[in-house]
Image (cartoon, rainbow, N blue to C red; front, side, top):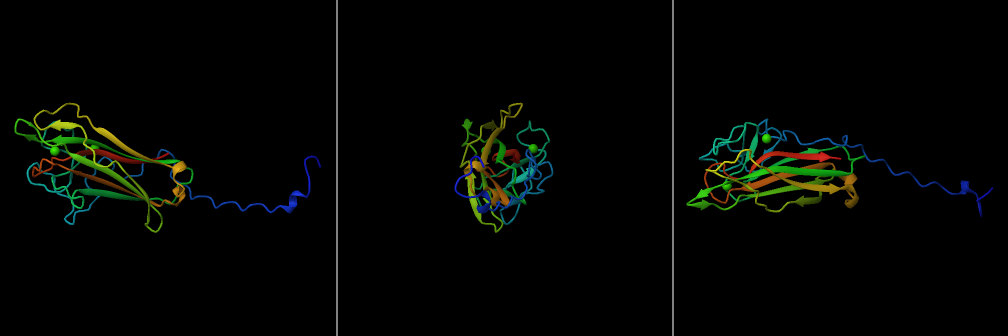
Length: 219
Ligand SMILES: [Ca+2]
Ligand SMILES: [Ca+2]
């Protein structure tokens, strides 16, 4: 009877247990398919109505994926998404939608892209810097956007056409959504990752930002 006062514990109805969140992928799982672009366009969608371009150093006007960029030289053959010169996001926009059954046991989602700029040689100097943007949307089961994150437009460091550096240096851009700051975290059922970039030098061909890899990792 020690510690009991004014009533009996069995009079108090237990609070209903909250429904458990559907289990998420194991922590550390990487969710994007063809994350390193080694499998061509597999898994990725080009928003342009005409789809992806065929990689070209002279005539492409949309994003393309290739294992072997021909200009400039210096790229090893391991898969790259390379943008072109139109600045319209509807044209230079490549995305992938990841569907998940739940995020139980997961505390964060990190989206990252490894990017390098192909700067144009214009006259005696280097042309305008390439523009790149990484955006990720978190959606519920109905497809409603719960939140989005973006790097905004950035200018990845890069190389000029006639001064290739070896090894090529890619810059990592990352966005992390934490469970602790997102009350809707357990309602997320899909993740849309969008890569956008363009070449302000306006050279016909694929001379925009180069994406070597893109990952979505849960932890
Ligand atoms: Ca790659
Ligand atoms: Ca460029």
